[in-house]
Length: 41
Image 1 (spheres, rainbow, N blue to C red):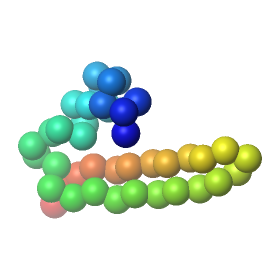
Image 2: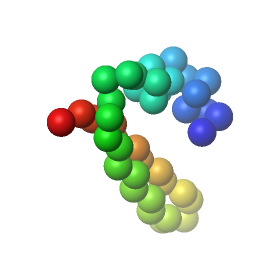
Image 3: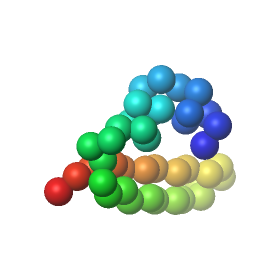
């Protein structure tokens, strides 16, 4: 989370007031992969 908040593009997406929904995905293939998708209906 710290990395995302320190990256302006990701920070803007996380703090976007128009986003009312989110989905999270996680996978491990020799390292961790995390994806977060923000949206609104």
